Image (cartoon, rainbow, N blue to C red; front, top):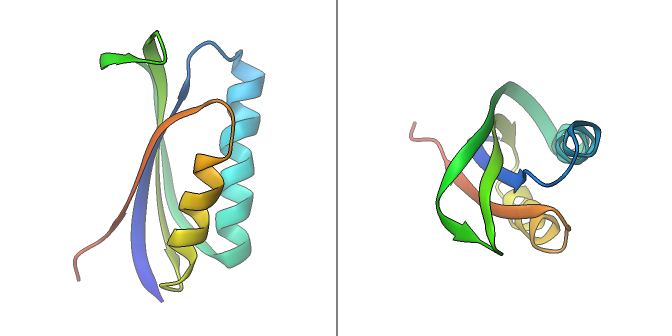
Length: 94
């Protein structure tokens, strides 16, 4: 098992319930393949540059432990999900 962290930026155009449901979907997916160590909700912030004509995004940082194969699947799901502006998955240094 390896430790990872992922930063997820979702659309600020979504209402609060939809944004919470979207992040909840990813939390459930991560829990199915490993364990969540921490979730840090950064809230709505201004983007450094417009993405899809949007100036703001909702930031969420999730630290988790899983097998080395899972981050590729998580990234694939991020890319096909509406409402996700940007993501990154990083392996933590040991």
